[in-house]
Length: 283
Image 1 (cartoon, helix red, strand yellow):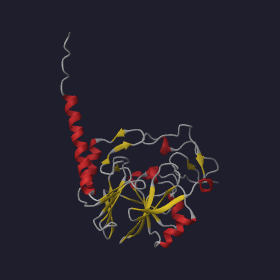
Image 2 (spheres, helix red, strand yellow):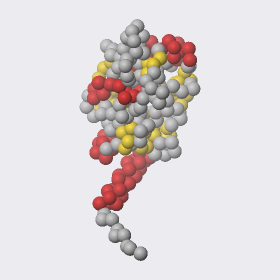
Image 3 (cartoon, helix red, strand yellow):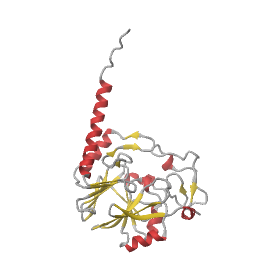
Image 4 (cartoon, one colour):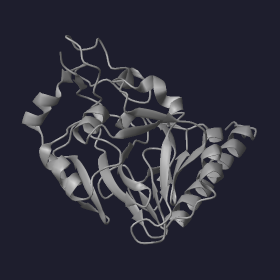
């Protein structure tokens, strides 16, 4: 039996003789099924066609799928006082990547922001010695490969101790999670986000969307809840979901300004739509 991997989103499924009939992650309206239809690969096949890029992203050990596969997220090793945390996961595990992580002190826990990045999380856990995978309980239904290594946390925040806190930002998925590290790499604090919020291409703002590929905006109430849950935290840096997509310096100000801009535009839209249309004058 194989643990099939969806070609479009990169999620690995529980072992089966035949591939699943569909990928629930891609069938959901936050994602999409590939234009050529649902297709599958396996971890073994993936390893013959792809490799991992391993290097440094803004002071942290980083890895992603070289040449692109699925969703282009990258994983980061966070050497915190609460342990070495692997933030996010990839679809492919390689001996080189595992060796690099072990050389860097190993991994104590895997923390993932939301279901689009669950990828081959169980494969990674097993390769690293059955390390715990931390996911928010609100997204439990999206786990496609169950494992005893998965632990679910609940509530709007959860301290891992020693200045590391998980924050349920919600909005994109009910359990969408950000990680706040008091010290960060540069000493001024860092916020690690997936898609909720999402670091914009200009690397000066963040955005708030229910679906990024399908351009569906996030509910205003969800954006407001996110703003409130992140309000207690200070940070200089914001690490986005892919390589180099980070706000280094001025991160707290950038996030606060992005919330303010979002609600300003929402208020302008509300005002415009509630005003009576101008009368059309005849010629």
